[in-house]
Length: 215
Image (tube, helix red, strand yellow):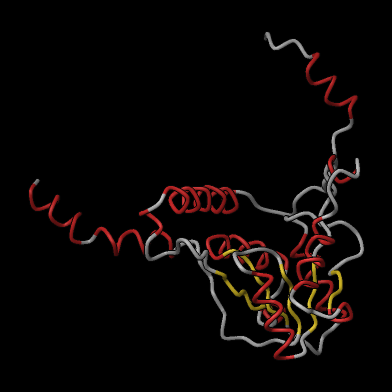
């Protein structure tokens, strides 16, 4: 028992780093001329620097509009992203949409594949959260063949407050790894293409609440 306890203490940090490493796919060495910005800490700063240095083209994703967006209370996420990029002096002509139609998270790899087929001469770097990068890689590999996957480079952005070397020392880091493991496990346990996203109407919600919960 004492030996097990000592081994646990001695190898605590390496074990914790290995656990977080399961969530990470990082191909940051790439400098592709096209950049798809998804998420991740300081993603606006990274994207702005890349566009400034390399004159790259930057793509955003227009997500499915929520109720607050439809009510005009908040602007769409891609519009807010354009504002942040404008603050960082990214020219409007360098920014475009991956697809003019709204794209859900599970539908995104398919849209990226379509874009690559329309632009066979280029490759793309995808900026994303570091602890969500392997889940994204799983989704991409289900949509892209080997040749297309080689044209997609995942740039995993670390959080400034935690990463795979110290995540267990803070509650936000621990929650990020736990959520990442759950989402990755769920993704591995499901197969096939996701059904198209359909927003529930007010009638659907009312009908759900009216249902008798008793068997």
